Every structure is written in structure tokens, then in C-alpha cells.
Image (cartoon, rainbow over the protein chains, first blue to last red):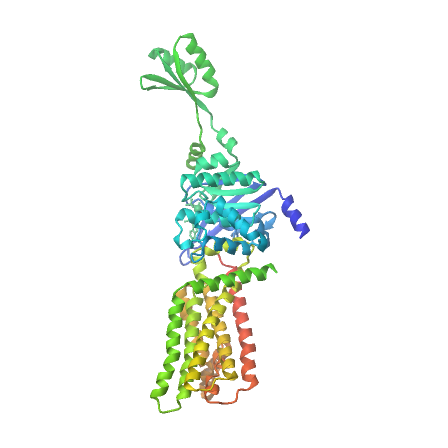
Length: 317
Length: 258
Ligand SMILES: Nc1ncnc2c1ncn2[C@@H]1O[C@H](COP(=O)(O)OP(=O)(O)OP(=O)(O)O)[C@@H](O)[C@H]1O
Ligand SMILES: [Mg+2]
């Protein structure tokens, strides 16, 4: 046991996926369909890792391979240094599936107690842990209601609670924000940030790129079963050149053409004013010229490169 | 230690699900009516009315017990995969074999609870009609319980990879062949055709010998029950159902959950 602990603690690459291929034979198994074609990436200790990609890209499939629910046709996947086909190491792992389903004949408290027993939470610690989690996900009031009567968002919340019941070190979330209202989404975002501050590692599949951008340290982008990018969010955003929009007033048409040309920018009319978009490094030059010719600068806005726009160009390009 | 606790948790949860579902009470209600109806048939008949009460009673216990075992057993694993409740369970330290075993034990306890309730009703009816009800009846009902544990194992095996519809057809078919395999063997041994002899022998070897669990005739006719008649089905039953569960676990462990 002692050696196992050290193995799990010393492992800097918490998740390691290498060349995973998954083939399925839908229907009568006559045709082979490749869902994952050589997926490789790794998740480091203590980071929030975003796994993003369009619908049907293979995110859920990859996560199911990691959870040992389906087996990879080729390649290997390890979590905390253990092959994913093993069982015992899962006491360090929490999982929220996509559209989670739970026993509807149980109440929220009973369900969490069931999962606590399965994950080996000591009896004495169970009641307090269950209350704590119900509080975190905002289900205290519904704790004694059977899950049959839960709404979609409530099921999602109880799903997050069960994933965390045994205080795991690595948490896998398949679209944790889906089905949640804005308040719930913020609560989960804060919860994930709190987990990171406690030194946990979080892996999440998501479509909501603004969330990924605000909470993930690193991302991998998967498109049609292949990884297109893996790296830090800031580097990813830095890949495209930043530009700035400058809005001007009281400048002649001819002057505008000249400015745009000198500063390698483009211009357009905007409610009687002129907007010139220039590369970031040309802003200083543009402003200098403006001062010289006595025009009025209304605003200077750095054009925000969102994860969404870079994502779109990665997926389409 | 961990594994045992997990199996117990899964079993208790399976039992709780059965207790909280309504279908079961309907089945139990009809079973009790059937057992009680023996009383009525007994009064209408000229022959030994005690024997009829007990024949009908024990047959009802076996019939309804089998019905409940198959009815619940074929969905036991399938439903969990279909509804994806299994995803989160297997993401815990629970292995697939533990899951299967936990579900199996839970269902066996559920079925046994039903049998005990039916047996109590049977005992009361026997007392009312003045029919004998002694220790040998406990042994007979105990063997029914073991037989049902075997039927649940069969249903679980099919449920581990097939739909409830197919599973119930397979299980029901095997249970029927299992009850008839001794008769088939007897017919086969009188046949002159060697292939016929071979066939019936083979069926007897492979299909579960369920007739061995049925001591109704002996007990209602007041015949002596030997030790071997109780010990043989016990050893045979435990061996057979262990094999079934191992096979189920082997198949289940290799499955993809899509
Ligand atoms: N058992 C299966 N049989 C056939 N095709 C499958 C099977 N499982 C998944 N697929 C296919 O594999 C692809 C990837 O599915 P997956 O659920 O991993 O996508 P995803 O990235 O999670 O998508 P989403 O964003 O919609 O959740 C899809 O095209 C899907 O149709
Ligand atoms: Mg998905």
C-alpha cells in the first residue's frame, strides 16, 4: 500500500493517453467505424484541463476509455500510473458522465450514501460529507426527495456531488455545465476553481468555450477523432495576431486612406465616425499621426481574440 | 474487505429497488391467491383434499418464484447498462465482477423473501385445512429456494449480454428443458435409435437438472426423503450456479458500454 501511494503521488502526468484508437462495429458488425484514430495527450498534476471539440468529435468516447467503460482497440491509457483497466486506483478518481442517470427510487441523500459506501468512505465520515456536498451543489432542500422528481439540472448537480463524494484527486467531468442555469454554472465554475486551489486535477469536456477560457489552464482540441492542438490556453490564443480598433472623428476621407495604408490597417464607416483596425504594433504610429493632424480619437479597443474564434479556425482549417 | 462491503452495498440497493417497485406486490398478491385457492379446490374434490391443498400450494410457490426470478433477472444487468446507471458505479473502485455478484445476491435475496412470504401463507393454509406441515416441508421449500437461485443465475447470465426479451425466452426455455431432462433421458434410454440416446444424454448433462430440486411428490405422498435427495441438489445447485456466474462475469468483463 505504501509503495502504491508513492506511485500515485509521484506521478506528475496524472493522465496519459498514448495512441488510442477505437473502432466500433455498429449494427450487425459488418462495417468498421473508426471513432478515435491515435489520440495522445497528457494531463499534469494540479491543472484544469479542457478537452474541447465539435459534436461527435470523440470527447465522450475518449473519456469512456479513460473510465474503463470501453476498451481501446489500440494504444494505452493510464491514470496516476495505473492502467485504466484496473479497479482499485479509482478511489482517487471521480467521474461525471454526460447526461447522467441515477437510481430514481433513491433520494438524493440515499444516493450519495450509496456512492460513499462504494468508494470506501468510512462510515463515521459519511453523514458530514454528504451534507457538505449537498450544500456545495445547492441541493440541501431536495436531499430527501426521490430522484424521480428531480429536474435535469438537479440530476446534473447530484451527479457532480457523487463524483466528489470520496474527495478524489482527479476529477473527470463530461460537460459539467450542461443543463445548468446561470447561477448553477457559476457555482460549478467556482467549485472547479476551488478544487484546483486544493491541488486537485480536473479534466473536463465542454462546449462552452467561455467557461473553458476562464477556468482551464491547458486544452486539447479534438476533431474527428484526432488531436489538433494540445497546450496552454494563453499560448493557443497567442497563435493569432492581435489587432486593435481605433475610432476617429473629424478626419478627411483622404487622410483616412493614407492612415490606413501607412499603418497596415483596414477602415470602415461607423455611425458617422471612422473605425480603423490595425495590428497591435501599429497602434502607437496611428495615434501619433492623429495627434499631428489634429483629429479626434474617440476610442481605442484591443480586439479581443476569444477561444471561440481560434477554436473555429482550428476546427475549420 | 472492500470487495465484500461493495457487494453488500450493491445487493442491499437491489433489494431496496425491488421493495420500492410496485410490480412485485402485484405478483405476490396473485401468488397468495393461488396458494389460497388450493383450499377451495380441495373442498370441491373427492380425493384427498390435503394433498390437493399442498400440491397446489407448492406448485404455486415454484411457479411464481420462477416467474419473479425470470421477470426481474432478465433486466437485472441490461437495465443498468441501458439506463447508464452503471457508468458512475463502475467509475468507483467497484469491479465488474463485484457489480454482477452484488446485483445477483440482491435479486436472490429479493426472490427468497417472496418465497418466505409465500411459504408462510402456505403454512397457514395447511394449518387451516389440517394438512401436515413439518420439517420435511421446510427442506422442500429450501430446495425450491436453491432452484430459484439457479434460475436467477441463468437470467443474470443472459442479462449480461442480451436484451430482456431474448433473455426471458432463453431462460424460460432452459428452465422447461431442465424440469423435463430426466423424463427425456428415460425416454431416450428406451429408444432403439443411438442418436436419440446420445441426444437425451447430452441434454441431461448440459441442462440444469431441475427435477432434482422437486421433492413435492415425496412430501405430499408422505414418502421417506433420503439424505442424498437433499444433499445431491445442494452440491449440484451450488456448483452449477457458480459456473453460471463465472461465465456471466467473464462475458460481462469484456463488454463495451456504449
Ligand atoms: N457505439 C457506437 N457505435 C457507432 N458509433 C458510435 C458509437 N459510439 C460513438 N459513436 C460515434 O463516435 C463519434 C464520437 O462520439 P462521442 O460521443 O465521443 O462524441 P462527443 O465528442 O462526445 O460529442 P458531443 O459533443 O456531441 O458530446 C460520433 O460520431 C458517434 O456517432
Ligand atoms: Mg460527448
